[in-house]
Length: 146
Image (cartoon, rainbow, N blue to C red; front, side, top):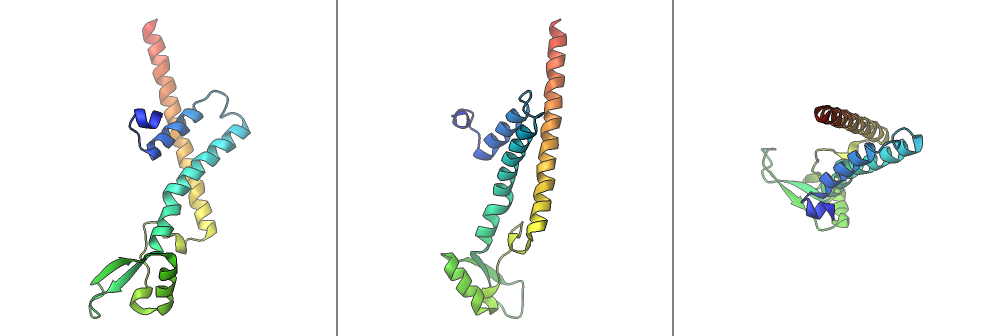
């Protein structure tokens, strides 16, 4: 309901929710709370950075329109994954797959885990900085009322 009332996109609402959970007193100090929050952040980051890219890229094919010039091509999307596999097995022009910004097909599990670790750590640092700013603002507001 907050997402609808505040006119937030789903991704923005999840970012706000993560930050609110991070700022809860005592939650961050317990290892269980920290692990739960890190798992929540990791799930969101994986969904936004890895999941959709592989599915979209595996259904696209590059088709050369001019044999002499490799810059002349079109990108075609096939209807389902079985057609994508069949066209890849044929080789040649239709076998080339389009590469997304995060080419998940060529990323190893170790590389993905390392990248996820970096992104989770970066997000936790962002939330810690946000918490410091909010606390500083609260102290300044209390000082102004005295």
